[in-house]
Length: 422
Image (cartoon, rainbow, N blue to C red; front, side, top):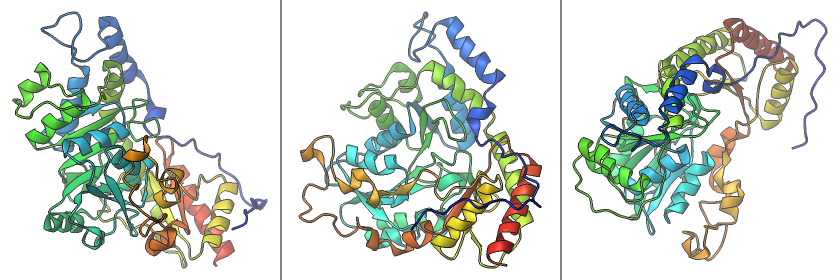
């Protein structure tokens, strides 16, 4: 498709200043400073021991306790990134060579590469109008080697968990909830991450809550907790964790994904602000959605629980990709932040999948495929996904957006709709 030039703005339009996007990072302030300075003044940067061995530092432990309480799980484990959280979750579930994990074709790089890093095969699945895993895909894709499904709650909206959980339980496979882009989101009274076997979160800089880098793994099963602890700390089960869950799992070779006290301090301040971020974005989103109303030729993202999403983006579906490109160009010319994509792409079109490599050729789960791209890793194998991603626009909503910004966004959508579709 040829590039779409940005149209000139009609002189009759009074442009509103383009709002600054951003979530947790742009609200960093006094709370983060106070907690970070507390760590620095104590000079205890490592969570498991400091100046007094009998009283280890408590920042990461406090973060875990408050995170578990908010998300409604028994256990939480702080790690170094959302990608690390996925690897810890996969390791905790014992997933490795010869196993298969169902992954939405449209999701972040780490969802695919974390599975490959464990030596398992990522099996790509279609998404639906939620932009999350489509119900029915587990039944379609499951084989005797399928050990888990990764449900990605994409950009602030929960997947259709009732249908997906029922399908996974019937198939006898484990459920990993990737909540990297949806911390605090609610699905019918429960926080995402608490419904499957294990949940993961990211605190990367652009996320709803951030510590620059960082992540969390949550679960209710004590065995999964111990295995996650060992996976994130080179096979060890230190005294602190042994007091939470008595060790019962043999030590194994893990990795090293321990969160520092400094990262935990920033994440803790952000966690305590998480529901305020969500409430603000939902308020602005409500102004946008009510202001747009129903517009002929435009569809909206399906939200299984409209009371539970985080409000961080408004999605519009146009009838064709060409129309979506024109619509987005005109909105941007009117100072409405609007992107064709949001940094996520289909795995089957990305280099790490096209090249089908792991860190060692013999470690690649694709090594046995005689032809490549094989069925299930080609664009033509995903008509439903392709039919959605080629004709949508995403309008982000940040914590610095005002209700007036929301009203302006809605008015400009109506204006462009009148120009192109009216």
